[in-house]
Image (cartoon, rainbow, N blue to C red):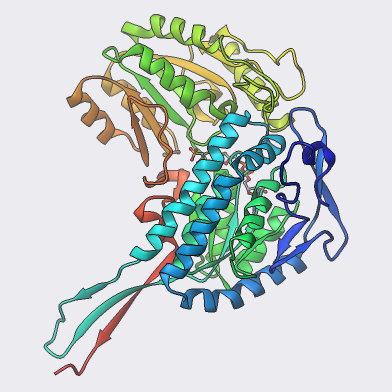
Length: 494
Ligand SMILES: NC(=O)c1ccc[n+]([C@@H]2O[C@H](COP(=O)([O-])OP(=O)(O)OC[C@H]3O[C@@H](n4cnc5c(N)ncnc54)[C@H](O)[C@@H]3O)[C@@H](O)[C@H]2O)c1
Ligand SMILES: O=C[C@H](O)CS(=O)(=O)O
């Protein structure tokens, strides 16, 4: 059994996290070279699982099995593929409590947030099961009397997926669902800190009747080995990656030799703007939702909060009062709002950003310290008097820190908001309709939240511009990333 009692004792279904890596349709408790690695609970450091540390042998086996299984899978009707995705959706919902417990104990987020992530991940499986039936093509009026022009969509083939630790269920579901719906096969390498959520999805996919080989979950500590395997093997037609921009850049370079099709969901540096005419209470709630969700460890978290002068002091006061109500603790404990950060490096980065800001003149309105619980817990923090020279203005903090910048005019704040190499999510609060359109159209981002801090849904296209990535996940557009267009020119039709 891969999982320990530290996790099994919290599960109704103890087999859900699988029994090792899921490679080419079989569960592997051992890798070819016999190496293993531990998965620990960031709330207390307890070992919750020991998994095989897969090598190139397992990755190659997974790719070969995917390449074989995908041929017959692509020949099934959309309805046949949709029915298996629907069965998987139903199983994810039925097992949501256990899936949430697995997620919280390997990643740390509060259980209620984890359960929300499970339903969010499941929503992509439901959505793309339906979209499978709408993989339409075109009939185009011919350019000559004897010609008929057809355009069809066909699955890309084998997809290599690499996913991050902060949404270990939803980030795989958001890739696997359109891939399987369109007739592709997938080999996934989850983050080594959080592999169990992906293994649980594979376990339920097997129970839902997904044919062997179509989905593999390779658990490995050498992520660069997996990235190279995906890049070098021409049976892998596409790489889909969610994670940091620097790793996305590496994968893009490695994929260039084979002109590998790429979907990249990368880093962010989201501006969150509050104008004088905003509903301040709504803006505060929006800031709480956007900034402190997952302890600030999401790619779409507000990273820079710009507040117009006329409401700056009132907003800062209201926000600090609301943040002070947040409870820090173990994600499995009732009432926890802010769980532990994922690792020591994350804690050090948060400390560095705070120390840098204070050294350049910012003030700590609230928090700013390592939490008294110690370990990976950090106090939710509000900084005021923040300026563009500070690290938190240019780097993704990825922690529970809200740096408040003051601004005077609409033109100034748009210029500051756009002054970054990132372009994923952005947010602003205003009740002036003309301003809403002007600002939304001027922001250089893939996503704009207006009078809301929460934008994530399966029905909308999620993705960024500039160095936040390429491609879109979710929505009717999400299927396109897993298909190729084929133009068929029919001649001799007299
Ligand atoms: N745009 C989005 O949808 C989205 C979602 C979640 C996280 N992110 C971003 O991800 C970052 C945080 O997540 P993270 O710390 O897991 O990112 P990361 O880039 O360090 O790791 C992401 C995944 O890539 C793997 N990896 C690392 N180096 C690799 C290499 N050389 N070759 C192949 N794979 C490699 C990791 O093992 C992990 O599975 C943040 O920048 C965040 O903004 C973006
Ligand atoms: O980290 C960013 C993920 O994409 C999470 S969400 O889609 O915004 O919930």
